[in-house]
Image (cartoon, rainbow, N blue to C red; front, side):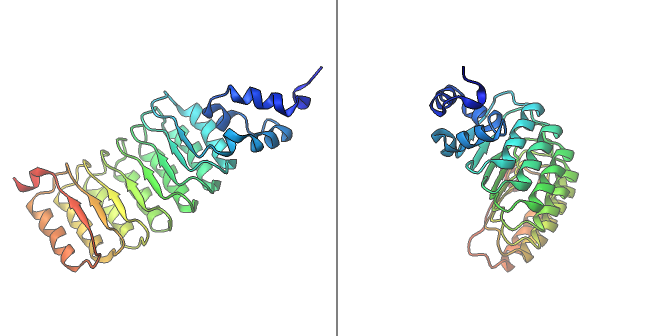
Amino acid sequence: MYTFLTLPIELVYRIMDHQSDFTLFCSMQNVCQRFNQILNTYHRYQTLDTLDLTAQQIRDLEGQYIGNALRNNKTLITLDLSRNLIADGGVQYIADGLRTNTTLTTLHLRKNRIDDQAAQHIGDALRINRTLTTLYLKGNQIGHQGAQHISDALRINKTLITLHLSFNEIGDQGAQHISNGLETNTTLTRLHLSSNQIGHEGAQHISNALRANMTLTTLYLSENQIRDQGAHCIGDALRLNTVIYIHILFFTELLN
């Protein structure tokens, strides 16, 4: 009679064949040393570089499983958790996993329940993580305090290239925080700040950052409240900015 520890490897592989990618990634690590060895030789796990968990009703508990898996996983490159229900608790576990993860480059957290406290966990992880290059935080509830946490991380982080913060609530004060981070950041090239309640004061702060930052090449500012005054500030900054290509999109109300 076989026990779990003595099951033939071929039988374990057959059991794994019937598991979802989510189960392989989250629930089959660290069961025991032998099982870890088998898992690491299983073809589907070895080639699991993309995990799409969009709109799966994932909450904080599942976020804990995902965060724990990220600590040890060496294959995943892209993780999509968009349109779920992950809040502060789940984000904290995921951020903790990012602190030690060395392979994930793209993380989608669009349209979850990420607020300023959750943004702090993300910012703390970005201070340490050295592999993440693309982070999607579009459509959450990040305000100016959350923007400050992310900005503080941008001062230190040397790997993030693309940051999506559109459809949040950072406002002029948050734009100031992000701009402060941009003044010293030397790696971010794409920044999305559309629909963030940014007015002419925020545009002034952004223009100040553009005078100092020579790395950013693409900036999205559509669907904000930037009118003539803010537009002139950014336009003046672009006369001094020596970046070869910088693309700034404004909402049509800019012209009204």
